[in-house]
Image (cartoon, rainbow, N blue to C red):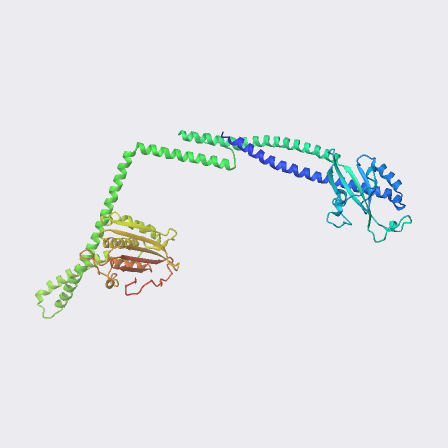
Length: 538
């Protein structure tokens, strides 16, 4: 049977209360018993003193008859069971029970065991150590106390009999009293304590049940009822708990969750109603993005074509301009040809300006720096190239450090650098492979690095020192040789460094480092030497 929350809490609390209150009652009863027992021992001890003082005169004159009478008279008082007087040998001299007069007690007897338990008689012992508890044959509990009679000056100089001065103990007085009064008090107190415990448990349980019902059970029931309504889809109601505790906070969380669930359901219903429209809109957006990528690819191709044409035209135009100027300045030239040569020089200079404009178009400009994230710029560059046909069989692996601070750089120029390197990496993996992009903090903590690694064909060692030269290219009929040169210029304008490591048949890694602060100088020694076998620093 599954118990509800309220019965479980009530049973658990009652069990804890019962255990602790029973322990408290037990400790109180034991303390009271010890206190009453100490009072009984004190009473017996004082009774023994009274008997010794009352019989002292008779014992000085060895008047045993009168001593016996005094002991019997005192023994008739209520609360005294037996009084007996023994000498140091253990022989009973006087007793309220005449039949034991003259008998010899063994040292192992209970009356003697208190002082002779260790084998040597204890001259001085506390009242509690000289007391003993035992039960008579009729079931009555008794307390016995042995009290030593010491040899003082009166006893050793008495004329009636002589005790050696060196004797310390002359005899023992043993007093026995009943413990029925103490047991009655304990029984009364025990009954009162048990009744009090059960009364307190009942009252505490009643009030705890009321408090738990009001403060816990009712709020939980409201929350449970609210969850059942949510399960049925009823999200128009909220939990009303005017409480500032954890249950009140839980109710507020339930209400916030209900509002969000309702919003999510409304959005889903709206999506279901307008799914076709949204799919059409999304398709248009995707088509526009694809068109934008196509245009970006075309612009990249046009940029390479423009740079190539400008480079190819610049050299012959320079020759034409030089020789035309030389011929025009020659005095042997026919004056009728002067105007024609002047026209040739002017048109050549105009073509040179056109070529210069084309070259300026393909070269980097001054950076427009602003706080930027290299992760965001890399993501943007990847989004522009990863959908191209070139990257269809290439797996792109991102390994970013997400705690990088923003640094001052031109995001457009770095996007151009990243796109250039990504395209180079993709072109080196003609049959597919993996492209690993990493970012992080440099070992010295002064800069940020970004590394682009491919599994392509690699770069020959003899070409490593030339790859950043303008118009140097290993791509037959595909490159202008300006991409890495422009990238190098952009990185240099940002006070950064670029390093390349490559191995034929294994791939190439380009690593760029840019200082976090603009006043940081870049003087980190990259691994490898300038030979290009292990790395190249430019």
